[in-house]
Image (tube, rainbow, N blue to C red; front, side, top):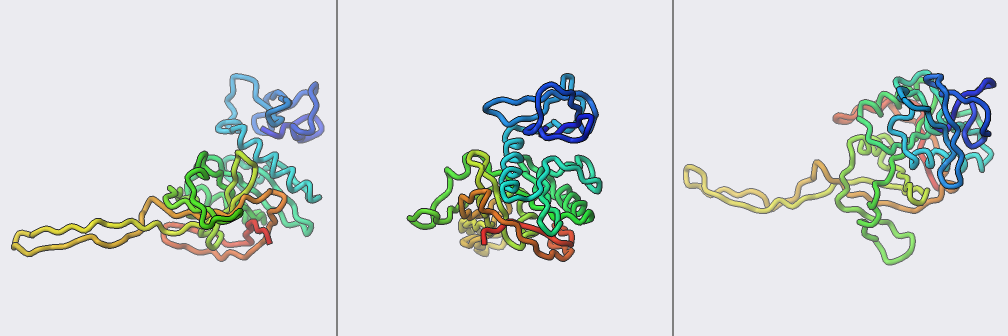
Length: 270
């Protein structure tokens, strides 16, 4: 965790000093401040741990939250990590909460684990109900860029992964943003702008004779894969270069996906 409680309120590990007593904002039990030279400063529960807040947390996720916080603080914006939002169900913390100069709040959710479509729909709806826009940022899978092909022989050319196993919630996010998503590379701390499109599979031709002796044919055509998508990536982009833009999202349903309506947000480099 990056945030704990002390007698005078919440404090981030990056700004805390060793010595005072710190408690978990969720379970109120004592936590230990860990400040080293390599790993990101954080709080850790004393064993045994029964609180669900630290479960599933990774140092890559902690580092990502710290990097995004620092990037937006360098712009002079008000930023908080692990900010609690009462209208959310379950874990009520936003990874990073940014407050724009006009008072508009934007939650940045750094998704290093998979999430169900139902959960991302419900959580997005909870943010919008609180008047908060939300930007979902998937982590790039480890080793993915090594499998990419460049679309041109020049620096900065887009990369394409022809067979990307896009998760259902990533396809949902692509539609929520009207065709696009931003992905985070934990190995470099940079962003990539991505776009998904259908991946075509060739159906091998075949023929046979039915019970009447008539010859039948099938295949010899292309069909879209249910599993694979073609992912094109533009980048890498420094966090300092990513700006936030707002757009209106109507409440709609498309196939199995449900999109809440409200003031949405996404990154841009314009």
